[in-house]
Length: 46
Image 1 (cartoon, rainbow, N blue to C red):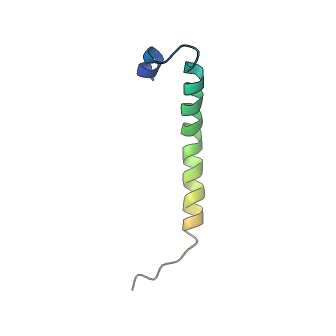
Image 2 (cartoon, rainbow, N blue to C red; image 1 turned 180 degrees about the vertical axis):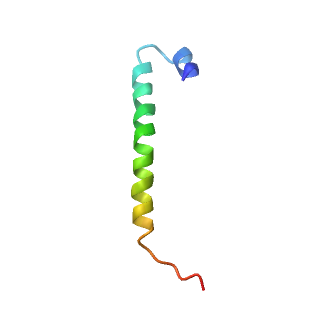
Image 3 (cartoon, rainbow, N blue to C red; image 1 turned 45 degrees about the horizontal axis):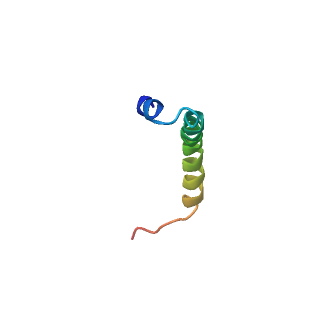
């Protein structure tokens, strides 16, 4: 975050922080939804 804050243009920094925060919050939700959808399929290991 410090690298981006130092090297991004000042008017675009809040937008970048917003994208990072949104992806940080949606990542676990998408993981749970994907695992729920894939765990419905059964596999016969034999």
